Image 1 (cartoon, rainbow, N blue to C red):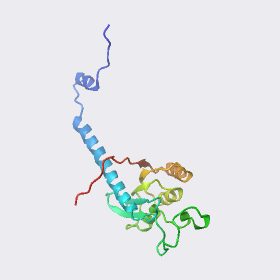
Image 2 (cartoon, helix red, strand yellow; image 1 turned 90 degrees about the vertical axis):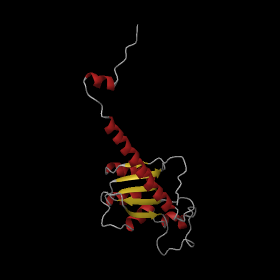
Image 3 (tube, helix red, strand yellow; image 1 turned 30 degrees about the vertical axis):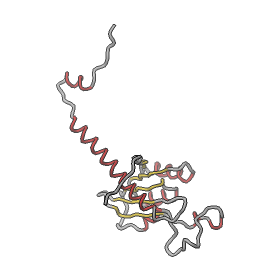
Length: 185
């Protein structure tokens, strides 16, 4: 006995004399690819920005973009202005001289150095998922969404996700292509 199969969508539409809108499907696919490329571009800018950090272990960069996809601020993790990074230590071993007591995070630097009146509805691109303190300041700044490159399974990051979820600010990890990215000058 021959096996019966369900008709395909195209076959079902043909019997109804309806043509599937392939051009719309192609447009949507192009938009998804274009959006992914845009997000990857801003993550690359955040990654390059992170290279300014003198932290030997964790270099973080942040880019904030407005609704027109214009960069309104960038930031990287480092000591506050005027604090000599040759005097203060970058390690975490001595609890009295731990870098976490002194370092200003990339997101905070980007928010402080913004070149616009408000970050309301801006999008944040960051190389490392925001910690709980940075999530608080991003929520208070009313950003629209957070895109990130890397994540950590630690309490500060889990707390961030919980706060962002509760405040309905979406976040999404951007996966970068494996091949080298070459800039030709």
